[in-house]
Each structure stands twice: as structure tokens, then as C-alpha cells.
Amino acid sequence: MPATAVAATGLPAAGTPRLDVARVRSEFPILATRVHGRPLVYLDNAATTQKPQAVIESLDRYYRAENANIHRGVHYLSQLATEAYEAAREKVARFLNAASSREVVFVRGATEGINLVAQTFARSVVRPGDEILITGMEHHSNIVPWQLLAEQTGAVLRVAPLTDAGELDFDGFERLLGERTRLVSVVHLSNALGTINPVRRITAAAHARGIPVLVDGAQSAPHLGVDVQALGCDFFVFSAHKLFGPTGIGVLYGREALLERMPPWQGGGDMISSVSFERSTWAGLPAKFEAGTPHIAGAIGLGTAIDWLSAIGLDAVAAHEDELLGYATAAVGRIPGVTLIGTAREKASILSFSLGGVHPHDIGQVLDLEGIAIRAGHHCAQPVMQRFGVAATARASFAVYNTAAEVDALVAGLGTVRRVFAQ
Amino acid sequence: MTQLSALYQDVILEHNRAPRNFRRMDDADRHAEGRNPLCGDQITVWLKLDGEVISDVSFDGSGCAISKASASLMTAAVKGKTRAEVEALFGRFREVVTGQTAEETRGDGLGKLAVFSGIAAFPVRVKCATLSWHALKAALYSGAEQVSTE
Image (tube, rainbow over all chains, first blue to last red; front, side):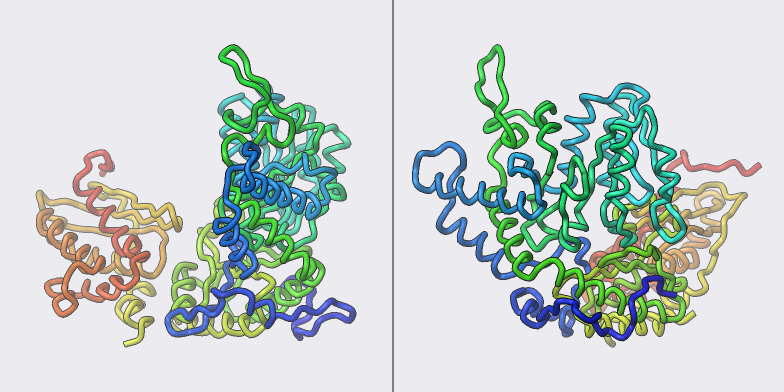
């Protein structure tokens, strides 16, 4: 049975900001695609989101009219490109409510952000036997970087347990916060379960023991309003491509005092103050962590995506998606044979499930033939699959442009799956 | 025939529901495991050899309908065949599921395995259809997978 407390009527609560979904959809050229003769129903937004016309145009405009390398030219185009790149950094800082844009480092994505923290901050403070604490619902990108660190330093990876609903067992988490814990790294919104973690409680508990906290915001940034100061986190990472922006660009937010203390990660151009064969000195923040020519167009595209999303308003986005998730949870949960994986009280945008003995790949295949794109597999979260005793799940994940009619198409498609694989 | 029924033919659905030779074989001469890391599918093929001839074969594990039905039909097809015959059959099967044969003659000489000819239109599912065959080949040719019979 569905576990979220949202009514299945599809009616919004009074006072909820309304969203003009038809207008939003019209801004996404790809949503007009037909797949196997059917209209595309794109429900794989946790993997990546589609791009609005504004973002596509900003990339096009950059390459047509603004392209040059940044931070070094005195010429017109270089100044234009540098201004646009740094303006994007300011937009990110405001989007996250960072204290300063010096705290915003452009990276390739959330994965690279976590690896950067592992190899600079953590590697410089961790001694053999020290501990990194994560949770049982992490994406591989918040597991493997710590395993690499553990191999390099003799550190130990500790994992906080989950409840059967897919929530963090907070007491279990607190018990693992110890003398040797050097960093807590937790996902904000689980990509496999949809669970929203209580990040404020986590940072409060960790900070009470003087332990910094990294928050993996790959899923949360496009769906929940993120305020890094209110969350109290020390690091926050996200990827542009899950937020209607380009692939290959993302953000590491870090508190300035920590970033200042951290050694650089990659060496190269742009991250130095001066270089000689004897000794080099590092640039200030955030350039110290941005060696080499960055993905300039990507950063500008991310800035445009943030403008686009902010114009709609994350409150309206969250209300729309909550309504949709509630409707989908009830409708899919009613289908005989469906088991929902991840029934936390606080959830957003993600519906993971299994359907009788039908393998998720077969579910995904049949739905694809009806034009419906979902994800089938382990969602790069194999330990989560092991925790819930499944090899894989089917996952529908929603974004601002999805509709109740698309949920109905999903439900009808699952009816076809049941007919084909009738036991 | 719709795309759906071209892929999930009745024989495939039936073998998915009730796979043949679906058991662990504790007294097997050899076994080998095939894994698809992309989807986590895992199939182990067990066999007994009488000289060059496969005298018994079975499989167990978990996978999608295509990989399970393919393993089931494979075990039925290779029992009593020599290594060379199995090799030739796998070669032919692979040509068919990867669409390297003309459509009119696609199923020729494959018997029941011809039901997988629809896979050619779904390239991402080729690995599902060939997973058990790769495991079988590993068991046939690699001494390392030998299991103790006592």
C-alpha cells in the first residue's frame, strides 16, 4: 500500500502555488518526441532531466557569440566569456544561499565534487583507523570515493543503518558518530528510494562533535529548495544535468574556512598564483580548485537553468511534484503484485517498485514500447538493493513537466506488463 | 506482429514462466557463472560431459525473461551435442540475435531457438539472450570451473 500521506484525488491543497504545466512543457522541444509511434512519457528524471529552450539557446549563444578562454585575455570576447562564467557562479551562490561565490567551485558533477573532497579535505586530515560515516542509502558515487580513500590512508568506512521503510535509523546513525569520525557524507534525497534525509538533524548531531558534513544534493537540488546555511552543511554537491542544465558541469559548495585550508586537487593552469620550477603557489578561492580550462558553456548553461527554475519557483515545483508523487504512489500501489521499495514519510519525486516476479528490465522494455521511459536496474545503489532483498527495481522519477495523464499512461503500461507476463 | 509480441514470443514467455533444466547440479563435471554487471543478472550453467558430448546440462540464477528463457531453451538444445556442434550453434544463434543474417532465413537451422530472432530489433537485449551461452562456453572450455563430483 502507498505510504505517503498524500490524497489520491489529484487535487492540490488550498493555497498551493499552481503551475502551468502545459506552458512548462512547451518550453522543452524534446517532449514532442514520439517513441514507437506513441507520445514520449519521460519518467527517468532522476537519471537526467530534459533541457528547456532557454538552456539550449544559452549554449548556442555562447558558442556563436561569446566563446573565448576565461581569466586571461584582455580582448573583448575573453572579457565577455569571463563575465558570463563568473555571473553563473554568482547565480549558483544565490541559488544555494552560499555566503559568498568564493564558496562555489565548478566541477564536472556531483561525483567529481565528492571525489575532490575525499582527495583534498579528507585525505589531508584522515589517519589510519579514522572513520568516514555514510548511510545505507548512498549512490555508488558516495561510497566508492571513500573506499579509495580508505585504501590510500587506512581509514575505515562506516555505514549507518536504514529502517524497513527506507529511512535513516537516526539512533543507529548517532551511535556511529564517534571519536574517530572525521567526516559525515550523506545523500539529501535518495535516488533509489526517494527518501529525504533529515539533514539539519544530521549536521546538528555531527557538529556537536566537531565533525563536518558533506551533503550529496544530486537529486535534491532540482526538487527541494536548498539553503546550505540553513542546512548547516560544510560541503554540498550537485550536477547541472539533473537540474535542466548541461551534462559535464556541476558544483561543489564548501564553507570558505574549510576550502581555504584544503590543499589543491588537480594542478595546472588557472589554479596557481605563480609557478617556478622550484615552487608554485596557489590561487585564491575558488580558482585553487579549478585547474585547466573549465566547461565554460556548461557553467553558463547551468546559470540559465537556475534562472529558468527560479522563475517558476521551487515552491511551485515542489508542490506540483508532491501532488504527482502522491497520485502515482496511490495509483501504482493499487496495482496487484506491486511492492513499493522506499516508503519513507518524507519523500520526493521518486517511485521505486517491483511487480510480482517480473524482472524490472522486462517492465522497462514493455513500457518503452508504449513510449514510456523509466529506469530499470540497481540505480547505482547496489547496497540499497541488497538491503531490500531485490536485484533491481523499476523506478519512475518525476520532474516539473510531468502530468497526471502521464502517470495514468504508466499505470496503463503496467497493466500491459501484467497481461504479457501473467503468471 | 507487434514489436511487443515479436520480442516476447509465446515460447519465450512460457519458458520464462516454467524454465526447463532449472536446477543446481551438485554432481556436475563443470560449471561457470555468467554475469551482466549492467543489470545484475546472474546465471550459472552446470554440465556433465561424456567425452566430447554434453550428457546433461542445467542452469540456475536470476535474470530477465529473455535471459531466463534463452538459458532454458539453450539447455534443451545442447543436450546430447558435441562441443563442436555447440560452438557452431552458438555462432549461428549469435548471428541471428545480432541481426547479421537475412531476415527471410534468420531462424533456419535453429529449431526453437529461432524465437529469439526478434531480439535483432532490440540491440540492448542481445546480452540478455547470450548470457547463458557465454557461461556455457566458459564451462566447456575452461578447466578452472571444474567442480568436484565427490
